[in-house]
Image (tube, rainbow, N blue to C red):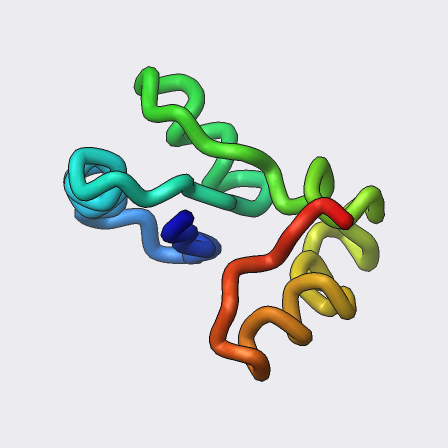
Length: 82
């Protein structure tokens, strides 16, 4: 399975980019505001907190600092729910 992690502050062009990734078969993972925008525009994405089981902290500034995310990046593999 191919996964893409989307977490951006400048959301210009995000909807088109996310839709293109989805059309290529990527499962989309996203963080707070990014996830909300995608969902509001009908683009399927899983929220990172759902995958990690860990909520965003520090007013949303810390989202992806979790072993499941960093381990997958370092390993070059998609994070799993195990």
